[in-house]
Amino acid sequence: MEEKYVREEKIIDKTESEKRQELVMSILQVKKELDKANKNYEYAEEDLIDYYSYQIKANCSKMDYLLKLAKEKGIVMNMVEQIKIKYNEAM
Image (cartoon, rainbow, N blue to C red; front, side, top):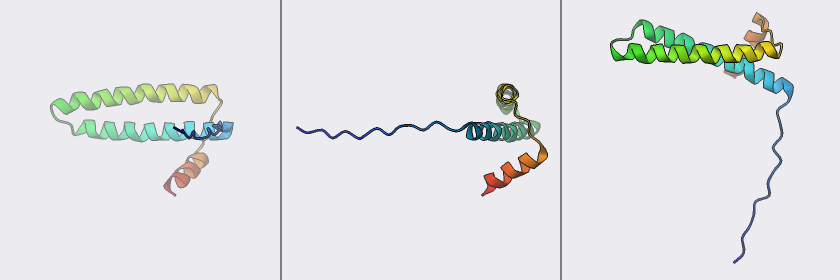
């Protein structure tokens, strides 16, 4: 019985620039999720209040972590970079 093996391809690490951009994109995504959870919390009823408060707390913790990473890497975002990132995200 003959078995065929698929040749493994080397996984290419991301460049530092790609890692920084991915971190910024993650921060923006968490910000969107946090805004959405806050908005939903305003209109939540009964059991959903607990659900959205949990989401808010989880997203705040995630945001704190991501901002800490960004600070350690020396990433500073200005409005121009945010606009460029949002424009590229929409495409």
